[in-house]
Image (cartoon, rainbow, N blue to C red; front, top):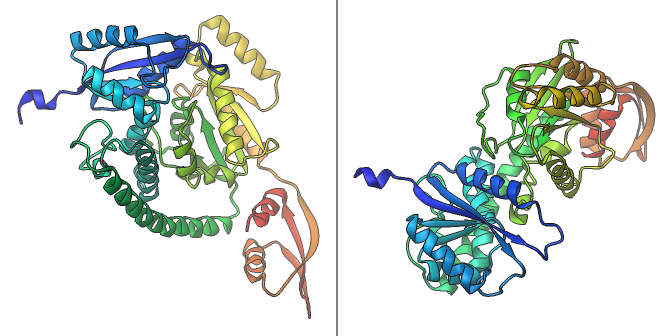
Length: 424
């Protein structure tokens, strides 16, 4: 292989700053995040980035003619092969821009799908990414689905053979989606069995959630002694990792590290990763990890809470908030953060890197997971044998009386066990 064949694809990042978008983010941090997203792909070299003010969206080309020509000259001068647009781009806009600029164009959804594909490791993660990518590709009908037959990481949106017949593509995608759904159904069934076996273990489950790159995996590694892939990049962790750990109090818990959230997460991926994020729905306690040193930490927090709500996590679900990366803050700001956390329940200032603040966090985990027991009596029909078996597996049945209607069962259980029982 020649040396030049090994060179990364030269890319330029554009952030359309649409004035009419009521929910638009501040252009500077939005562009910085888009560049960080692009940097998460190993085969890309970001050679430049621009925020483009848009008074209005141009239906066919996204940008105005003058701006498109100005950008074309910039891209030609910089020898750019790929333009990443930080936002939605319609199939027509993508096709038109590629024709005028003479290079590949990828929108935010396509870029995130590329990253997810590059990082997914478990069989379920790989299948879900491929399904999300196919669904996305089907709406485009710009390139052949065969791009998605990967020789290595990536979904193939950034290159590959030329276009083929649209109808043939659509049929091929639909057939492939049917096969993937069948495979995924088997994998999800296996995961359900794993969850059922975990339900028999009387260990509380603690799920770490947070915006991507908030430091969840670093915290997970410090707590568990695991060696989860950690890097200062977006989406460093994609597949959920679970470990049993013993707290200083002697209590044992299961800790789960989950995929990082991000603003404007593609709807295809929210749906595709719902099963992966069921670890959060199963959790007895959610630990929301925030990068408190980040300029947009408040916005990131709102995005995380919105996605949790979309996943079906109740506002009343037990949750504590961890303000991470205090080691990156100026001394005066750090002192203010630590003072606020000291006077606020369920709020902790820590550095997962240095270990500062960990003692208070661990003590709080133990306290939250101590659950008073209560006695209850209810009736189960003969058809509800699985629920009855679960209660006995938990060792919480204190009395049982059988009659012609079924079983009248008395239990002595915790709120957590009652919650898990309700999900059977």
